[in-house]
Amino acid sequence: MEFAFTYNYNSLLVSAIFSIPVLLYFVAHIHKLFKFRTSDALVQQPPGSTGWPIIGETLEYLSTAKNGVPEKFINDRRKKYSRNLFKTSMLGQPTVFLCTAEGNKFIFSNENKLVIPWWPSSVDKFFDTQNVSKAEESMKMRKFVTPVLKPDTLRSYVSVVDAKTKQLLQARWDGKREVEVHPFAKDLTFILACRLLLGIDDEKAISELQKPFGPFSTGLLSLPIDLPGTNFRRAVKAAKQLRGEFEVMIKQWKSDISQSHGMLSQHLVEEGQSGSDAEMAIRILALISASYDNVSTAMTFVVKYLAELPDVYDAVLKEQLEIVRAKEADEPLNWDDIQKMKYSWNVASEVLRIHPPANGAFREVIADFKYSGCLIPKGWKLHWNAYATHRSAEYFREPEKFDPSRFEGKAIVPYSYVPFGGGAHMCPGKEYARIAILVLMHNVVTKFRLEKVFADEKVIGLPVLRPAKGLPVRLYPLQL
Image 1 (spheres, rainbow, N blue to C red):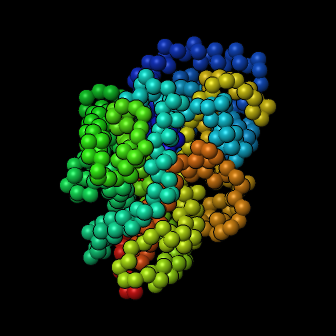
Image 2 (cartoon, rainbow, N blue to C red):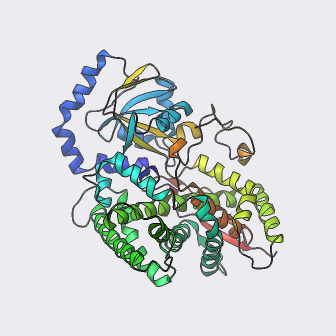
Image 3 (cartoon, helix red, strand yellow):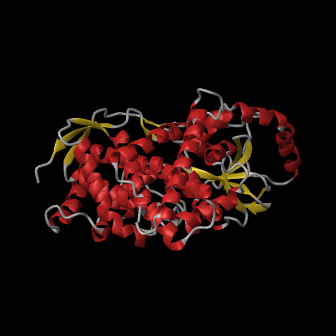
């Protein structure tokens, strides 16, 4: 479930701390929090502090985050307590941050052995998974998604991604002096998901489906107060509507097996799937929601750096022009072209190092174990956070510097670079994201030079990581 439920950590904390149901839960179980502090003190716990009763260190985590990045919170505690790990309290849970590449490897290697996926109960309302084991649902989701998004399947869709990207750029950017990148990236990722995954190519149908997706995406990371008029209530209602629409699609796919309606329908018909239509609808909603926020965020920040750094832009343009010159006029991109975009992917990789769209995820400990000489009790939560290693000089020289050459055949310390997770549980959407990002880069740099409207535009982390003003850029058409 990593791919579908790795959401913005900051937003989850805001949602939880101000949630009336969660606060009531804390009050009802506050004796357990105090028991956690006293009874376990007889053994060697991870160093750290659990902060205030009930709220733990949530407010400090949020207040010290800069540009949506929790770097200061993590680094301060690593210096004070331990380079490897520290304990805190987040979302009302005793939580241990593992802060090294070795820690990331430990988490990814012990999935379903010592730890299982965990996310706040408020998320379950959107996907109707309140009474489902998180570990079981995560495994089913991965089994559902992995064969659909495997490279052998995706390679035949590169030309489709190219055509839809060109079409939207022509409609939204051609003839314009200034555009906002983030809203464009959101629309593009949704169009691609509809066309590739669902087989929907009609603009009106896509627009109608996107209407409930707006409040769903907004409310997914809002305060989980389930009252009329709140973003959370609207999102729950939108999620229910979307699941219903996906169930209708699934029934149509099954009744019309002679036609391929997209990668999901093709796989459903050819391979079959265990589970009801309702369960399949939940997984489709999770899959598309992950694409909607994570891929569009990555696209936005890639364009941001192309607009900021002329040298990087020029090098990307040089590589992309070599691809253009080797093709016939108007010949679409193909899989082989994607493999040639090595420097462009280095640029995108550096963007994902500095601004990983999903900055981490939780795990629940299912059996006591020792790590780095400390006891981690059953029931505690573990958290891996990409920024702990991505922004560390221990793994990346001058980590604040934008340097695509880091990825030019040089050995990156295993598990230090984790924008897609790692190990056997690497995000199955990585190749899908790579194709979408590289195709956009190709079509943007071969048509336009870019200039940021606001040179010092801030980055914010709520509800999702994004430029504060939507990244408006000026366009200067190229004459090739």
